[in-house]
Amino acid sequence: MNEIAEPAVVAAIVLAAGEGTRMKSATPKVLHEICGRSMLGHVIAALRAANPEQLVVVTGQGRDQVEDHLKRLEPEAVAVFQPSQDGTGHAVRLALQALDAAAAAAGQPLIEGTILVAPGDTPLLSAESLRTLAAHRAKTKVAAVVLTATVPNPTGYGRIVRNRFGNLARIVEHADANENERTITEVNSSVYAFDAAKLRHALSQLTPHNAQSEEYLPDVVRILAKAGDPVGTVVIDDWREIAGVNDRVQLAQARAHLRDRLVTDFMRDGVTVIDPATTWIDVDVVLEPDAVVLPNTMLLGRTTIASGARVGPNCSLLDTVVEAGAVVRDATCEGASIGPSATVGPYTYLRPGTRLLRGAKAGGFVEMKNAVVGEDSKVPHLSYVGDATIGERSNIGAATIFANYDGEEKHATVVGDDVRIGSDTMLVAPVTVGDGAYTAAGSVIVDDVPPGALAVGRGRQRNVEGWVEKKRPGSASARSAARSVTPATASGADLSVGSPTHDNGSSDESQGDDS
Ligand code: UD1
Ligand code: CA
Image 1 (cartoon, rainbow, N blue to C red):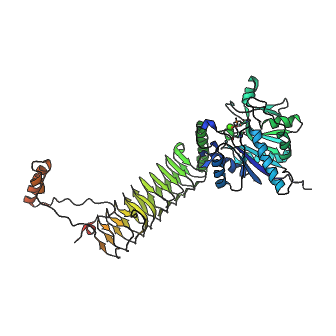
Image 2 (image 1 turned 45 degrees about the vertical axis):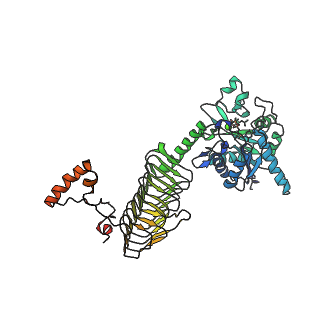
Image 3 (image 1 turned 180 degrees about the vertical axis):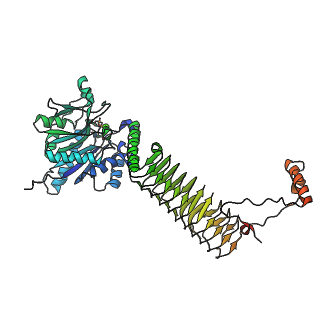
């Protein structure tokens, strides 16, 4: 009782040999990126949803770059080289010949079943549309199904010409169309599902007798229809899905549209996005419900933001993990991991290998690289932390530098639990500061500090009394000094100026005391 199942999609062919002249770029058109993925990558991702047994990409201009990219993207895919761009029909014929040759070499018959074709420059094509197209071809068994849409401005597209019964008769290219045909707004997307055998036969009949002297793939439709083979269409509602990208203006439009799609989906899934227009999210980013994204923020690569975390404003996060309840603002983070309830920013740069554990802080004007900051430890101001491990509940005073580089090699610093590093400490790696130890503000630490010790590594202060009066007589400083010193000394009032204190508690008396 079962029907003989239609063979699944035997192959998907992506056309990517064209030059993309209007991009005016050294990079082949299909390698330009939209939301963290090349245009070619987007088309392949959509095609993958239809589960093709084989994937072929036709390359030509910029062949080496496209093939290198393809190897990384989809190692299983086969690249077929089209030496001169003689048209989309010619490109598909080469691809099909390569598939047939591979089958023959493996002792198999010519391939049969559904073949999908898509251009490499329609990055917004959805997986759903491709699945619908393949399913329609499987159900109706027609020789060809063309994906079409009605567009506001059909200039440049091939027009869908229907017969008096409303059935697809042929496709006429813009350059070949007459005035009447140019008024048609239903256009060819350049995405098709074909029966392999019918396609093979029709391709052999293509000629380049047209305005562009190319073998047009759309002519296959006319050839099939004329021979009495039924052809059909799948019309999609959202014309932007099939919008081809031919220059950088269209590239930006496609990117903005995909951004809108991604941000809208996240908002529907419970993410708060304060300003969708200034929020850029790559396709592989994960945002959990109740994450909050503030304006002017780019979430790139494989970044993930957990529930309750707040990111932005003004953040750029690449391959960064932000855990629940963390707050990140005005920061650039790459390959960093920001633990639960940790805080970052403003004006903070976290480089690869930075790990802030629960409740840790990387504050204003702090840079970190390859550093683990333990639970509830804080690096609040103006510091560089590189190649370091910091324990729990430790505080790193303002302007501390982990000097990890001796000019040739990088070295590690270890700071224990409950440590208080005084402001402006220079930790010269390799060095270890034991649990509960302190360093005096302004110290250069070159030797390990035992647990519980205070390390002082700086010159003793010397005051040369009356120096200004002697060396700068009559100056503004001398006048101020004269006014200040005399009455104070006379009255015995305490006018001494303490060292500025910081809210991190790093410059309290004990750390300043070197006696
Ligand atoms: C093509 C269609 C047109 C359709 C439009 C949709 C043809 C003749 N026309 O026009 O009906 O409305 O797409 O966007 O097919 N390519 C090759 N080898 C070639 C020529 C092209 O691989 O010899 C590739 C290009 O790299 C591109 C795709 O095929 O990815 C389409 O070619 P393009 O020149 O952009 O065709 P359009 O003029 O846009
Ligand atoms: Ca195009």
